[in-house]
Each structure stands twice: as C-alpha cells, then as structure tokens.
Amino acid sequence: MLHNNVYDCGKLKYVIYGVGLLLVLSLLAYYSFGIYVLVDDYDRFKIVELSCDTKIWYYVLICLIINLDKILFRNYYSYEENFRLHFSITALEIVMLVFGGVEIFRNDDCITTNYNDFLYTGLWRFALANFILQMVTSLFFSANLINYMCNKKKIEENNSIETRSWC
Figure (cartoon, rainbow, N blue to C red):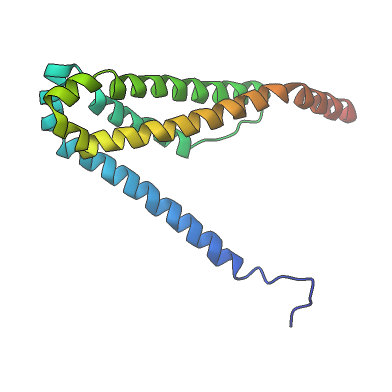
C-alpha cells in the first residue's frame, strides 16, 4: 500500500529503459543509414565531384566519425582539462559546420544545373540533416562553453574554499 505522498518508482525504471533503448536504436539507425548512403551514392558522387568539385561525401564520412566523440563525451576532474575538452569540441563543431555549409551550398548552382537528380539522393539529404544537427549542437556547445567560462570564478572560489577547509 502506498501513502499519498510516495510515488512508486518501479514503473519509472521501465520508462528509463525504454528511452535508453530508443536512443541506442536511433544511433544504430543513424550510423546504418549513413554508411548505406555513403556506399550507395558513391558512384554518383564521383561523377558530380569531377564536374562540380564537391566534397560532400567526405563531409558525411567525417560527420559519422566525429559524432562518435559526442557520444563518448566525458568530464574531467580539473577545470583546465574540462575547459580544453569543451573548447576542442566546440571548435570542432564550428569547423565542421563551416565545412558542411561550404560543401552543401557552394556548388549548388553547378549541381542544380548539371546534376539536378543528385539533390534528391540520400547522400545529399543525409548531409543536409547533418548540417542542421551540427547547427543545433554548435549552438549548444557554444552556449555550454560560454557558461563554463563564466562559471570559472565560481569554480575557483569553491575549490579555494575546499582547499582551505582541508588545511
């Protein structure tokens, strides 16, 4: 029998398991589809690459590799190591965002004029989805980095208080 102010958390674990399973299945689908479009549209890409000088296939490949780092994101114990990690990931996201924007939109006229069907391939759509995903994650990581830098003083004050209490 449950009291009125106590909630049964036994059912909550199934929700957590369900969300975790959904996340794992989403990641598997993302990587499976990414590998599929890289293999399936490679021949079309090579033809378009020769004429329009696009590197969109390489952008998608690098996105698949780099997104693994966000999955394995970790925190370190010292502020300096955490700051380096946050800065590196934010800089990498911004560089990939610029690279993706250049590759998707730079050769748009050449591709539209000569290879209009390439815009409807899975490779193009997956690259565009990665670009949008990177816009969101770049914004998130930039805000996280700014927040982390603004909280540096608070973190240093807390560390100095903890150090004094140990003395």
